[in-house]
Image 1: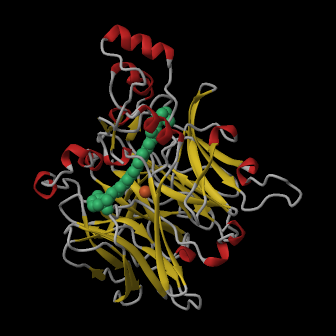
Image 2: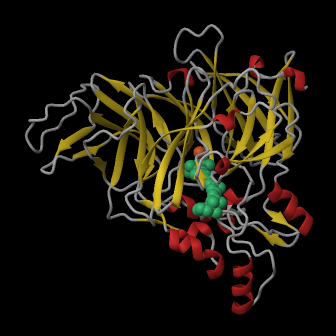
Image 3: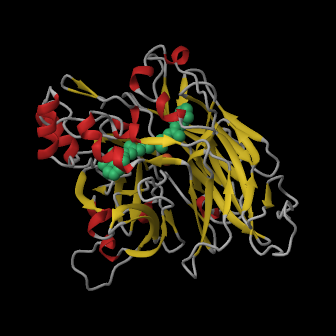
Length: 489
Ligand SMILES: CC1=C(/C=C/C(C)=C/C=C/C(C)=C/C=C/C=C(C)/C=C/C=C(C)/C=C/C2=C(C)CCCC2(C)C)C(C)(C)CCC1
Ligand SMILES: [Fe+2]
């Protein structure tokens, strides 16, 4: 919902969250959608205007017009209450599902009815102001996530934490979050300029954190309300800086001693990472700058969008390879990558640092998914939406990272959302399964639908048409029947 009363949000990632679901039952598909009844939603609806700030829209609870009134307003709400408009992803902890964003608030939902349940503040369990919407899960279902602790006890750091998938039997009110455990933390290179990150990677032995020169400016953030600017304007890309690749050893809980870096870039989504013959392979979708966020300002996304907005920075899927047990006596300038399968390099430098240059896997894909059973392991296929020169996705792609061959699905007037891979129950090969994607149509005469593709061949297996307006979503999950607590139904 981008308009409340007479007020409008500025940015596509600000709108009030709408959760939707497709349920497969007895050979039929049921569709349901509901606004997330967050505190943000309720306050806005009650006031009939936007009163809670979002990333791209600063809201003023009191309509203060002049600077003095604004200053007064600022002093009385030193920091405005942060949003719980969780519009990015769905996270599973134990038997619970949460709608998530990147602030310290997450919102429990009932996956059957999509009802909004309690609000949870990460801050009660770990001192973070921001946390990602892309946690990882291990095979036991424990959640691994990362957040930023900003100027807390004089330090700014990135905190990695674990939420267990189960709680002691005798506990009455079962909440996995209560048992959250901090695993380790990485100090930010700068107290007042921590990096922004949207996801991270894991392999068998390492956690991968890429500290990009796309940074928050804490002083600007602290004064944004007073200055009348949005939080997004407090992030900046420093193209002259480096991007640091941190490998945190899960056993020692420390960064490996060698400093590894690459050129300045902006990245949102990690695709996957794995270890192979003494190397760590890291696949990400990266951009040469931060223009992506600019493109999604709603003033650009009107009927003329295909004419008005051109993607100036095309997303590229890149592979970085970091050598682990390399020969310490190697000469300066040597490429330490010994994997024959890649053209990615890692050069040893005079000061002992390692400079990585990636291999290009493919251009123009975003919202990447994989068969999650292969997360952290050597894998072969990426499923993603394919994007070209405009801010709308037009295809779904399957990329074979080994041969770089691509399969795609497209249809006239169709805008596909993130493709989700659902493994076949008797999975033998990595791509034995289905792809689900909800398809929005740009022609009002054509109904939107849920598309089901065979993940192997990318041929259509089925589609379920719905006679309501569908909205382009960001991220989602597939919940197998066994993970649904049917008692709730
Ligand atoms: C800062 C800060 C804060 C705030 C926060 C917030 C409010 C946040 C939010 C956040 C958010 C809310 C985020 C979001 C994100 C998102 C994203 C990152 C997305 C992405 C996307 C993409 C990547 C796309 C793609 C594409 C293209 C490119 C084209 C075509 C189509 C598509 C769509 C596929 C606080 C106050 C706490 C304090 C501290 C600091
Ligand atoms: Fe994301």
